[in-house]
Image (tube, rainbow, N blue to C red; front, side, top):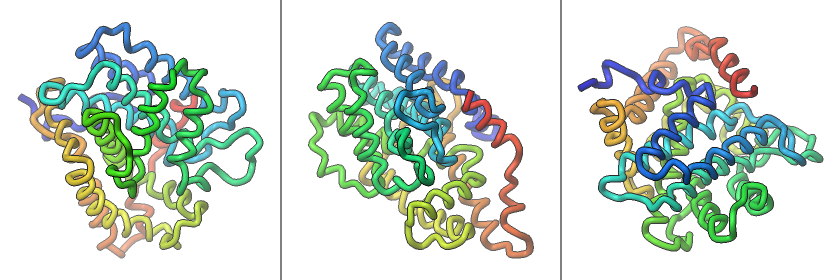
Length: 305
């Protein structure tokens, strides 16, 4: 059996390639349900990709470098992995699993600007992007062939991604639906914080916060320092309100790859450990230690085609 010393998360699936992500999510789904029921996810994946690339009528292309299509696909993959990992002890119905994956695709569409909106970037909607994502879903449900019931379920799941939302205020249809919401909220966090470019992308996140007018982020270095606090707060959210479903990832990696480790948490902890070293070392400019390489821009180029 392999361990975390043998393989890292980023080597399992090339998340810079949307096609590689949807292929893996398709495989995960087909291992649990009849493959024919995956068609709404695959179709919606293509439409959402067009949205982020500026090919959806009435909308501009994505203008946020942190909350981009790669983040959406990272969350999608993480949600699928968490659902598979917990399937033996808490299986989702096929309908709820499909809606969980669709919610992952829709959850950050609120950052996309409408065609008339040419001022600034989508980052200005940081504070209300969750509700904007829901508005996009409800406004365009027919484009995605979603009925009222599915739209309502996806709406409730998307609300679970708000970092300050109290899940008790969401009127879930069932305990299983709440469980799926916890998985989506968890996947949103794991997908971004375990990204191999997470530390480099923090500069992009700083720019988004700056444009959104979020207080407390006056310099790029502020985002690095506060990410440590964010990690501690987020860890408590993963364990508390989100019910510890992040542990499902361990079962997934064991079942899928024979790896006895939660590679998401391993990657996140490595990022935070390195970030602490950057903050403590004032001998050189922190930007140099972030090692922003050309591969980030290569990944973005692939993502946009």
